[in-house]
Image 1 (cartoon, rainbow, N blue to C red):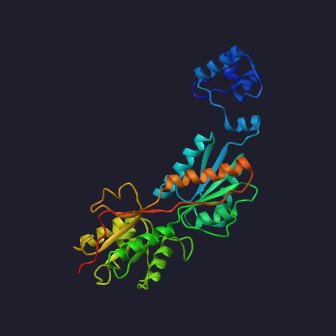
Image 2: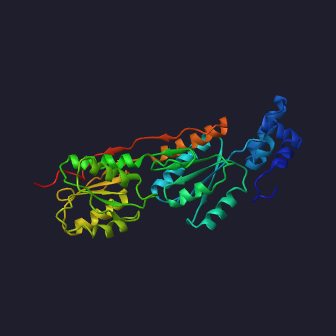
Image 3: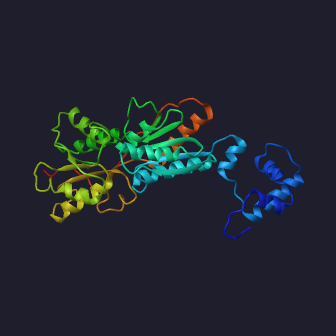
Length: 336
């Protein structure tokens, strides 16, 4: 066997001095063999470092063991942590995860990615539905494949099971907290949303409306600290801006930098609340008050829904977990 090639079933058989069919019987466990033969095969497997091929196992056992994850992004905090949770849960269940990145919301691009994914013998698929690309990908997948979505905002009418974070509730919690500190209103620098009225932005709007507080014009940004820095320029110097809810922690860092460069104290003059509770949030100065969302748990819960569907053949119910507000040092009552 060449050193650069992984061992195959025939290599194990030759090393153990048995037939390929005997090795197959030992590895699948479907047909009893003697303890002596079993020990010889297992010793050969260990010596060679043989690992069964997932496709071959599917042919032998009839059980598909591959799950596809389709996502627009794999690097940003929420996406990466969700994928981590999916992978951890899949590994525990003895399944393999293949990740496919959908480059854009172009229909032809989505179709190409899905066609490539479906060339595999899939047990099911998971879509990370944090953006419009995720929504369109979910809608394009065929109904013949069990598909579950991981999402931040609740979305009715999709026809697919969802695991949610309910970030609208997080937006409401954060806004109510700032209003409770005595701020007349709360400005919002938002990340892109999947719909016009959804997610953390909708929770912010509902909390203001519930108490009759003014609803300021939304300041739209993307996801990065630089985007938060640029968005803050629209609010700096305004006397009506005393509290800001940011769509994620990265925006909050950029906003804080912009205000501090102009000599505006956080939280002495402007209170700031982030979203997601990324690892750096606690270490920032001042430590960032933020809405904690457990993306890793979201990934585990999403896989659990898919696994339930695969095992039972029945569509599972949606799963939702409420976020928590983590109070630190970046928000305080307004001056005076």
